[in-house]
Length: 259
Length: 294
Image 1: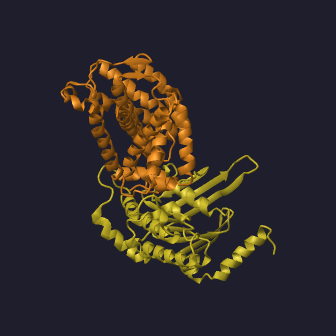
Image 2: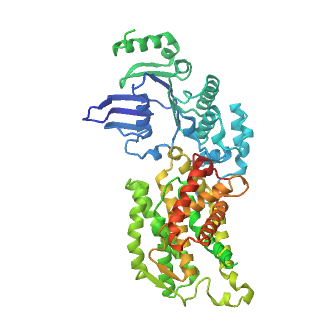
Image 3: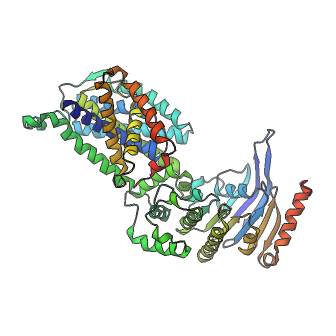
């Protein structure tokens, strides 16, 4: 269970650029839930993920993960039980290292970083099996430098790297947004498979309403730091693309963008 | 011939320092100016120990660890106190000038008669014809040892993590490790090698001099970039080896410049201009490639 309790977050308080993101934000995500998050730019989606991951700290309120207070935990320590895939495919891999080195790096998460050999040849078969599933032929590119891969390939590697060790929570920050439609589709399907297999509690921010509706068992829509729509289970299954578009439309008029 | 031997001697001594700079500049992508202070620190510690009667090899090892401490201090100032990398280096470098004087006692300390790794009973038994190569005979194994050790280290789990810090710092955070601590480790290792290089130089030249470290960073950087650019196409050559060869090439270029009539006093100016030229020719936008490590 991941809980955000009474979160208050304000950027540049007391200046002309003051930007109140959250005033009294509350959200709880039960273990095993796959939640998709939509909302317009500046609605607080990414800020929410950053608060959970620790890039930014709340001004007030608490973030609790299974009764553990994350609020006071340093950023890197939070990732012991958490994986994250970013929008930028370059953010999830080391460009100057080979695919094999990248996977070895990820594979060693939460283990000792000692003076034994970095690449364990006995794991190669395991990596190849994982890569084969992606269906991009990456299993034959283990010795190639990841910097030379395409965006889709890199994002697939990033996703595998984030989930290769046992984690409980997966944070997806618009991770298909920078990809072409075909690559996005591949990555999204792979994501869903991994989430189901490993039973990961997932938060997925997306601008793709089709993905937001088609995947996961809960959908929330954020607007100006508040939850405008929260649909779970059967309620979510009944949601239609038009319902979401209409809500976006309403917001748009509210903030003065008359058409 | 003497000139050639001199080039190799100097090139190999400074190659150890260049290996250190390779760690900070290429692997960590972090400009570290501490080296201008940790190089003479190694020299000062080594000279002080030898005067006190310590074993020359042991003195080298202790000098290495003195450099490690200097690197850790820079790292802590940069990472924990959040001071910019360049400034952190300058602070420690400046402070070290005084520390070095305290360790050595004064600004110029000779050890002409002392036993060193280049001047001992074992080497005196060498046949007369080998005498001119005596320094090289000692240096080559030391440099090879440093090269192999660094190479091996970079292929360990800890080494892999170090390499990824310069490559993608964010990723290290998601690997549940603090990238800051890895930076401190890298700076420690790098400055250890730099101090070791200073200690070897002190034993070879048989003195400590407070200004021995001036321009170390620029010199090392020139060596690293020459080596990586010059041998860029040779895929099978490891980067540490390229850096070592770069250091020798750099010393050769300086020797040629002096042979052409430039005075030894203009050495630093030559280095500065040389580095600028190298950066303009080879470096532009190719940094990423140079980071690829095999």
